[in-house]
Length: 80
Image 1 (cartoon, helix red, strand yellow):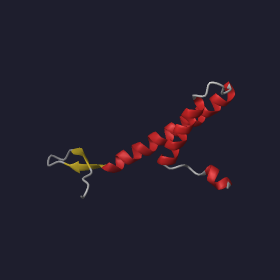
Image 2 (cartoon, one colour; image 1 turned 135 degrees about the vertical axis):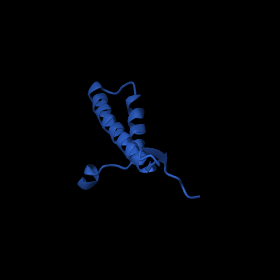
Image 3 (cartoon, helix red, strand yellow; image 1 turned 180 degrees about the vertical axis):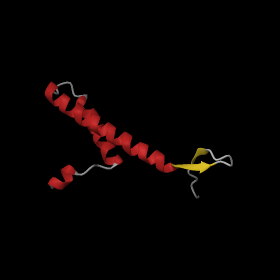
Image 4 (cartoon, helix red, strand yellow; image 1 turned 45 degrees about the vertical axis):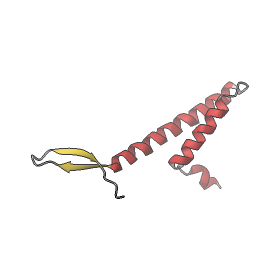
């Protein structure tokens, strides 16, 4: 069970946890210390999600060389 705590969550799991954190942080009776703890966890999850999205964006881009030797980016075409 300790291994589960140390695993990096996937995007969907991190996003769901962020949604849960927001709900917790919106509670008016939440102590400041707990709010700070949840906020810190949230900032780590935001960074993780941004990293995952950035990596996915890079995987979707393909560099193509033009006839004059320059490189240009194009979106990866999807097969239907």
